[in-house]
Length: 303
Image 1 (cartoon, rainbow, N blue to C red):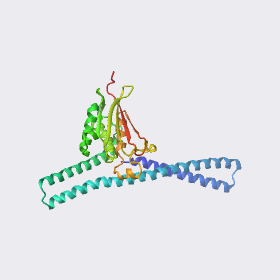
Image 2: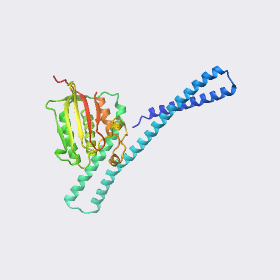
Image 3: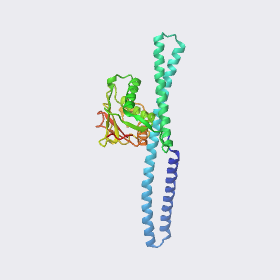
Image 4: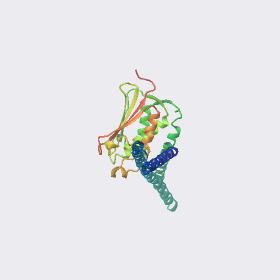
């Protein structure tokens, strides 16, 4: 998941920096004791002092970043423990009930349906973790590009999101473009990115789900735009740029009650950027909903 070699290089660099800083401090003190020439000592003292200040600042920044990373990793592990353990425990409970008791057919079918839904939830979580882990490894590999009809793909994703979450047709409304918008890309990866945004919109909408999905063309008519808007809990302005980082989740009592891995938006950004597009988020603040915009280059520029 995390680039171990990258973190190891950072630790080595800052360890060497600390040793150099210590050597400079020792040299400076020894120099004063030895009573070197005053002019040379002034120059060395000034350079050593500046180097120490810069080194301390860099070490402090490094330590703060490491602390934040550790906090995010711990939060990720806690969230993943819940996301994996909950459906497994549920499936086990229903299997034990079916094993120990004779149930009427309708009740058995209900149990089977619940277990299938828990299995789907478990598979989605595993798939998300595996996808996030493969992103860095596959970043240099070329995509298997093929024409993808965005309107058709978005409609399929909306239908799947309604089915997964037992929602009515009005809960996720899709306003497709009157003209076809085709992009070149990996249909499965694009579907995964759109589904992540729709699942997030449902999770953070609360009891009343009202999601609007709009497709349009950019003014240049070189890009297709997908807007996914919800009336949910919203996002504080200062968090809008951080939410696409790996493992990051917006702190707060409301978001804390909604379980997640902190990988969904990271996957969305990685997939869209790999397709030559970009993703942005907008919100008027807490309790005022949010809008996520995907922008993807068209395969054929519409006249």
